[in-house]
Image (cartoon, rainbow, N blue to C red; front, side, top):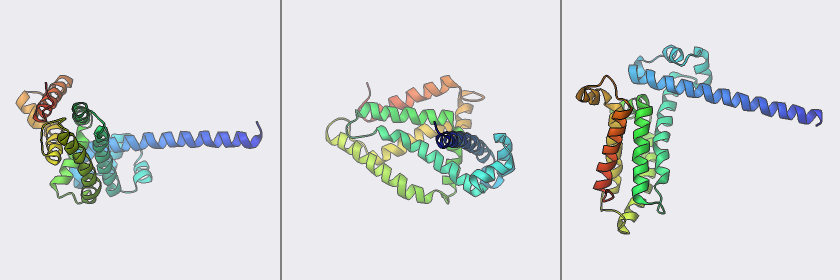
Length: 219
C-alpha cells in the first residue's frame, strides 16, 4: 500500500471515530436536555444544568447545539421523529391487526423508555406549540393524512371495522402518552412510587386490546 493510501485510510478512520464521538455526545446532551426541560420547563432550564446532567463541559453543548433555543428545538424534533417512525409499518400491503398493534406497542415502549421527552413535547403543546407549530401543520399533518388513507383502504376492503381513521391516531396518542405525561396521576391511583416494567406491560396489553377491539381486530 502506498503512502497516499495509508494517509487516506487513516483520515477515513479518524473521521469515523469523530463521527461516533459526535453522535455519542449529541445523544447524551439530548437525553439530559429531555430530563432538564421536563423538570424545569424551557424558562427554568439552563445550559449549565443540562451540561451537568449530561456529564459534559458546558462548552460542548454550545459547540453541538449553539444555544438553549436550538437545543430545545432539537429535543422536540427528535421526539416527533421517534414518534412518527413506528407509523412506517402502516402500509396498504400490511396486515391491519399486526400493523396497528405494532404501532401501539412501539408508542407505549417510547412512553416507558423516554417519559421526559413526552412531557417536554406535551408542555410545548400546552403553550400553543410556538416552536413546533410548523412541523405539526406540515410533516405531521401530511403523515397522518397518508396513514389515515391506508386505514380507510383497509376499511373499504372489509379488513377492519369502520372507524374515523384520523381520530384513531388521536386516540392512540392519548392512550399511549398518558403513561408518560400523567405518570404522577397513574402512580397515585395505582399506589406506586413509579411505574415499573410490570405496570407498563399491563398498560400496554390493555391499550392494545381496547383499540384493536374497537377496530374490529380483537380476538
